[in-house]
Image (cartoon, rainbow, N blue to C red; front, side, top):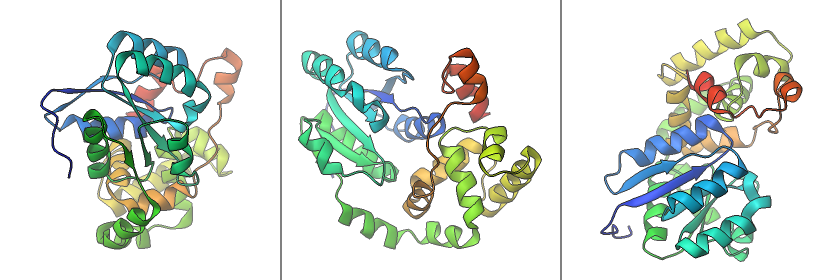
Length: 245
């Protein structure tokens, strides 16, 4: 375990998946030496937050990859370390070769996220290797038990929830009705022992077995019909609030 930095670690979390972003924030918020100073949802907000807030670490989802050069330019000026959050299908080493200071997978445990943030804050690097994933999965007995209770269809619903999709959008993806999705969610909550969507996302973050299972079924991020008509992103602040609630 890395020693804790002697000063507060200011962190920005940039991830298009609203519930997952909230889940990581929840994990880090309980650490006394970590403070979340921003959760930008667009490239413009991200670059502005980096320049104005000057965090010690920015957790950057790979969905922002096309803006990595701009992020690195600002980060270098303010001595900000970049911790890339990549999907399970991506190669962590590829991002390290792009010059970021650390890489974790979306299925990383809460403890690993905290460890990575602290190491980068100390000026060290952090690379989550594939072997660590296998070890943690084999030790995740709770996640394994819950995984056995869930059908593939329920896992697909969980994957969509974590990505920030609403019931109506999930119903469209699965060619069913919104009421069927609501009923399925109640069953999922009962099986896992959670009461809402945010608790569900946090459970997934903390249990690697489920995180990997849902990541392999994750739908391709897209824009809703309403968003396409208005030209607004699904991941607006209003959308995030509605999704979490």
